[in-house]
Image 1 (cartoon, rainbow, N blue to C red):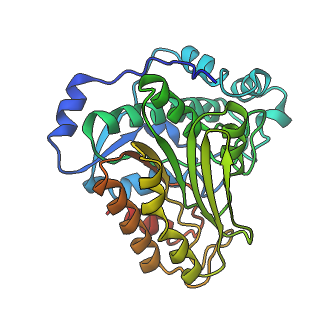
Image 2: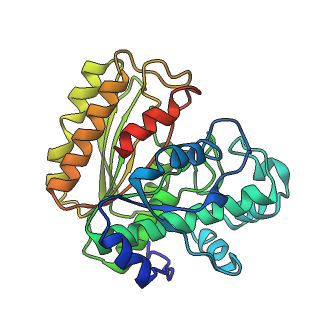
Image 3: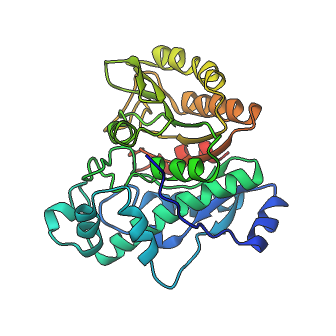
Length: 311
């Protein structure tokens, strides 16, 4: 597939300011936050950003007068009839196929998140640093529909833009959400993009396979020991494929008390250790990376758990 190009604006003044900052570069727009469902990508990100803002250097997502070009770009990746449904709310069963309640504000938010992910990758490459884009809701989104509280797969699309900008780039998805990223795999299969996937999840199946010109390592784990054994293979994976650009889905739903994930023995300290391993591996190799939040659903702990990733 030839990646559809999209001109992503990057403000020179903002770039200079964040380059000089010791805080975590963060792409953020408060319009990401809606109330389409409780404690999901539409709500928790705002609470996390506010709680940890003292550690963040926020680069606002560009605010075009309208999102027409963004919607047009989304429709080059997802089925146009599905994109129209999400944009307009009609038919409603298509607009809400991922599980969210549709509203105009929700439609606006998912388009802005799409734009923000592309900005974050451009920023990561320009800075040579890890950039935080504190959003969730991508890896279950299929080309033709939403699923599992994921509307659009901005993860694959933004890596596609990286490949369009720099054809010699080597890109990867490091998916440590508790659930298997089936939508991401579907996109890579359909587009035949050379995207490498490293996926540790709570399923019982694990395998290694070639996805057209990319490779996937998938690990189904049942406890913290198995989780860490899988994670030990990440550095070799990055080296084998000479990865230059990556997105890290830092889901905290493997946390042992998470109601929709939960891996035995994965304490808050274990999750922090996991993040340390991933960040160290990315930094040691100079990989331009974007961190997304992904899953995490323990109401009284999710802000602290995601905050540990920021730290």
